[in-house]
Length: 190
Image (cartoon, rainbow, N blue to C red):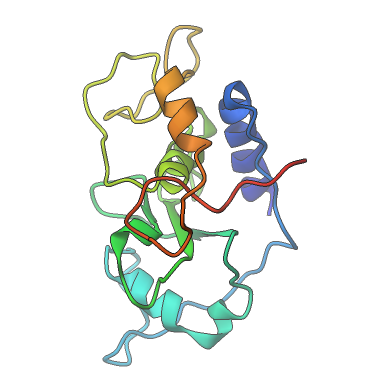
């Protein structure tokens, strides 16, 4: 639960420049991993791959807390070739619908992902703009859509977004039922 709070706090600091506050809704739940369509536990191999999320999105125990307008955040075992990934409505996957899922791998540093990577903050960018991945060769000071994983220890490294990204992240998807359109239905006034 402490790891979740740390990641949310760092994501809130990251997105404050866009006046976006990240809040946890409800309590942290610890759930057993579901089985895949073949009846195998999806994390029995101690990894979480790009299709394991289908089992989570389809599992009644996991779906019980799910609601539109809320990001479902999961901390998982190692994700091969990534720190995390986001499944947003733009992915156009039936079982996902208008829900948004973020999966963060926790294989580094004794089961905790170093918060200096701003991993959750980066993934929130994908969730908020609802666009296909645009991670590329941005300058070192950009954490989203930056194509590298850097630490944010330096004042000029991995701490900023551009004004265009800020505007994209704050855009409301219109109409909300058009999942392929940019924007989101995740933000509310506070």
